Image 1 (cartoon, one colour):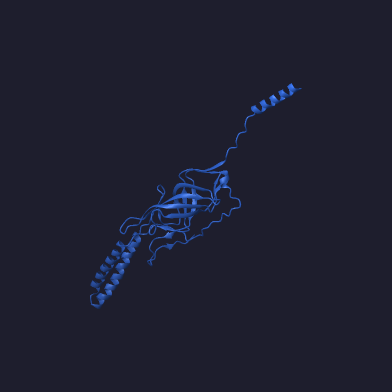
Image 2: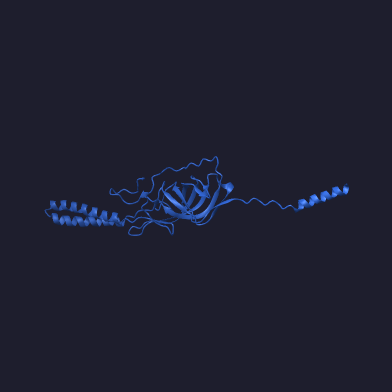
Length: 256
């Protein structure tokens, strides 16, 4: 009896030893691939007139970003960026330029990712130029406005010269002299005035273009019970930097 019991114990031990360990459950990850475009809205305004290299840019996501049907970046997630380079427009020639790099993504649950990414596009309502290859925003030219300024100066000078010439019984000479003086004064004003600055206005939309992978574990993208409301308002949208007929600057474009 004792021998049989020992045999059963030995067989039981061998059976336990022969059992294979259970395979660990593979962690489920969600990956955003390079080239993913993430729409953002500006929370502050940045312009080449006031900004310096190193200034911070603050944005938030507009629409959910999904991977395999799972939301990995919900609306209202925070994005921080940096002005890496800028150039003010010249007085005679040369357009303004602005480069922005995106550095940090913070999900509503506090999960953070640091990375380096760039602009993929800017607001379609914006009149400024955009270089998709370099992620550079380029300011508008103002040749039309300059020509208009010279023309207005010429007409004003001619009118004044005609009045003065008429008073001296030589209206034709006064007209020519006034026109020349008005044109010269207007041209000098154009040469001393910078072109339109590059502006990323609060409320305008841009796209962030990922240039590397961002990976989230399944437990990092749980957002149950969180309030994912956006903080931004519609804002004023892009800024039209062209001079208006009344001489105003920075007139906001209507929202369609």
